[in-house]
Image 1: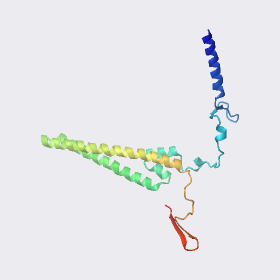
Image 2: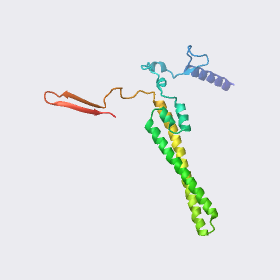
Image 3: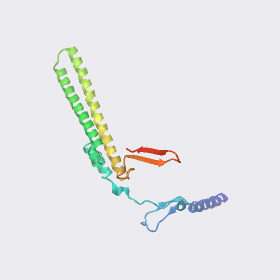
Image 4: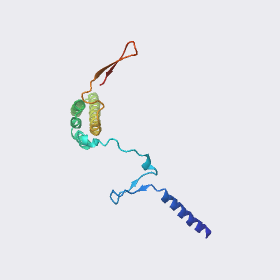
Length: 196
């Protein structure tokens, strides 16, 4: 019986300790169902927001829309992000990969037709090997085109997210700057800076 009393006392003590260490904070300005969990002492360790710029409002395009555009037409998401060189590279690469896959598919079809019409065993073996090689090349170029599409999609998504951030260089800042200062009593100190 004493074990039960001790167990109950221990449970109540632990429960009281757990409630004292609870880090739940309910803000009265928030909706009734909203609870913010903050570690103990969190309020004293935070700093006030010094820059309240909302970079989401500065985005060139919606990142999800950029991803969908690049999925439907590779390179279109890059055009929406104003990354024209990337768009040209993606379109050129996709055109080359898809045209190569189509050419190898036609070759494979031609070798298959010739194989079926041939009666010579040696020639049939050569044609069958050529058919397999062309089919493998078609599959390889098709997979590369799919990979380029996925890379294009996620590149457009990332660029769209980053488009709202400020640029390091200010507008009108020179790419080449020269700084000359006097050095003690003799000579000059000169520095040249180039930014890309």
